[in-house]
Image 1 (tube, rainbow, N blue to C red):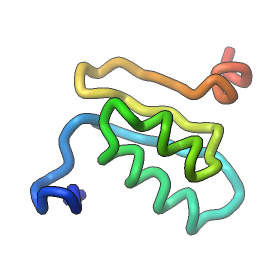
Image 2 (cartoon, rainbow, N blue to C red; image 1 turned 45 degrees about the vertical axis):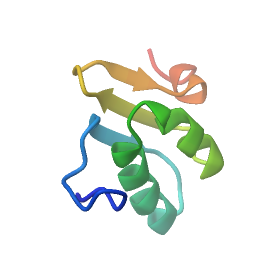
Image 3 (cartoon, rainbow, N blue to C red; image 1 turned 90 degrees about the horizontal axis):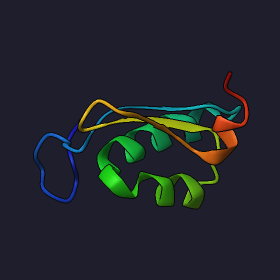
Length: 72
């Protein structure tokens, strides 16, 4: 996935997953969160995708508050 800001391969997050019912929105949102780096939570909120998970550059899994409430 290319970062449109640089034209280079995206760096910052290794993986992104978004849960919801609108497939087209989820497809776009997951790519945005992957490219967003540390600001991924801001973009998840902006895109109205509260159930999101990102594996960051260091390999640490981070989740939104809404998703954390659903995980065991």
